[in-house]
Image (spheres, one colour):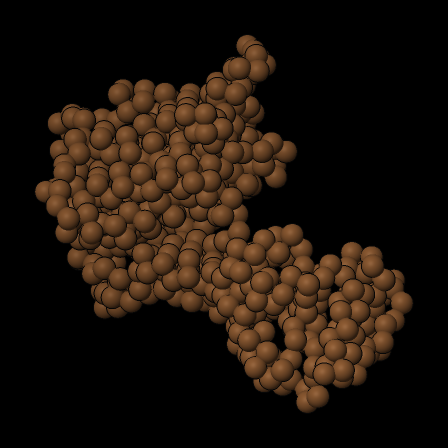
Length: 570
């Protein structure tokens, strides 16, 4: 219990325990929460519809998950709710497994997030390579844009799933564009762009939502022009707002097995997006978030939200920045934002039936543009070939194949990139006579600061730099095959080896055994404490000989001279 309390420390409890929360701070949180709640309204509705659920389910997600993430999370400023990143994966799960399958997958994702937090894996997500993150987000942005073309242009045909089939269908049906719907979409999009460039406090998406709805009602009543609205797509909303109830499919092993991968994808997306948003807020505010607490809090939120009919949720960077820019000081602002949305849901949601789908499409096109990070994408294309390849692979898989596959491949690529970077810092090479340094302090000081040492004839000194691990196995085999003739003693300088894994131990043992078979004695120099413990754990120190493991190059060379002398006497 004590261990869990050291990992899970909700930020809201910390704020109130310090006793620094006063009336002035509450007023600032209240104002920020009201503004962010209004900003979240059109996004929650749009994300809900785009994900394949109803608009009220998008709002319920923003209410329940937004409240729980602020209450239970590890940041001061993060605002939770449905986000554009989930549109593709949620729509895919619903299409394959139905809403019941999405409910189970979201709860499973919540459990995975909690396990990640308890296992202190929050820090791991800070090291995901940036090209992978940009590849994901840019790919999701393109996919969102692609899915909104139907409503933006007023197409009425059924559009197949998949980026390429979608665009083939669009081009085949260009003649059936509804120019009235297109004009409404373009007008809303233009309003958002102009509004956001001139007015900062009130979001352009809200202005477009209000203006688009008023225009739709006026066109219907006075000009007889009918635009497709939420009411035409969800006619049941006109009869009231029954609370959506989750439906659970038959819980068997095959269902759980089939949903494991989508659940993992939801969990990874949630962790990446929320912790990325938290790191951005840290840079803006100078505060620090607790990544493990945030994962646990979001895990709980994603386990509870589906019970109210909601969809996956995470921290939303745009709403979080709006919270900060409007004076939010604590998680209370996030709680207020959820309450504001609840009041809107209870008293204003019946009027949502008049919102035109063309207006929501315009809002999502702007969301896609904001997510695209095209400038960053273009900038990263100037990087080395490995980074560019990872960027393009992740982007291509997200757009052309499937987000789940992109996540899985992205995780593997992150590991491969890490191994590659570490391999670039690891090396083993023979040191020439004129390059060896050696006072007793030389294992600590820079070699340039120490005098030269002579290497006796028959002694080979090799320098190992970087981790001695599985990624360098082939390197050490190649090195061993190039051993010089006449060598009687080989000194392996390991002052620059921070750690060894089991594969490194195996490689070292193989080196020493092959050398011993050729009559060559191996001496280790400059072994640090961690590496020494690993050698002792596997018994390699006894195989090499405890007397042949030296702290510095000087005693190692002295020991080599002794071995050479003993060989001559025999």
